[in-house]
Length: 318
Image (cartoon, rainbow, N blue to C red; front, side):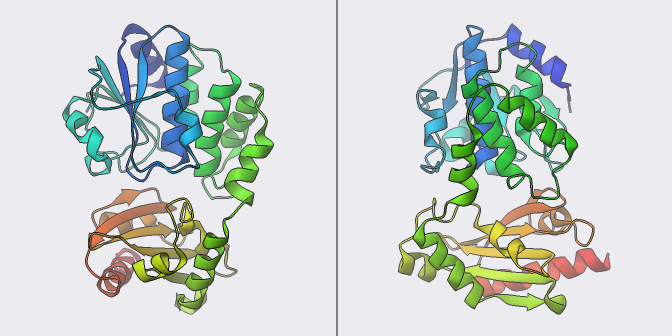
């Protein structure tokens, strides 16, 4: 296990070339924002850098990697992963690079250290903060870089409402905003606008919600039938696991989403003082943070529901 500091990562990046940057499955704002910001910073100092195509990216994020992506035919000299904690989170196009990642930049305490070197800081609210700390040492933070990294930070903090938000997160956001981009359309796009299909899904989730522990734990179930009935796309379901935490009195929210291949995606958002989400999901083969974690299990929604409940009880009684 070779861990390095942000300063060492900055030196590493300046000494190499031919970069391919990898993002994780079901890409969110943090992994896409990090990839876009890092790629632009490397190009600014004359490096050849690309972001590997990710077929699962939704239209919410495609603008940020426009002109930056490349398919699997590019032969890189240096492979970088951003916001990826485990090999199981590599998309299909990225899997051939799993054993040759030169540098992993991450903030997950569940990091598996698959790379030759890892720049890890699990105290950061978002991986975007680490990327900012790295690139700020060798590149000018342009409005394009600033906006990409702001997306990384703000989406992982839930527009600075989640428990991982601290003073440093706000200070980093302020520094990024000073690069000159307009944060209003970004915040409106990611935090104030919902599609009508999304609103219909939230209504269905409310109707089928299961409350436990005197209403402090809530489980919602997103089945293929519901998704097909609404005609929802991945964009409509982006970060839908945050919905449960908006309900008054709920400390811990579990979202079970049925996939098309016989699996169930588990998303757990908790009050970390009450329940450690990472420990629960670790029992289910997943991982993440104390307040937000996930896993993927094969089986029916009902079978997975019971396994999640059992894992929660095991953590609480352990």
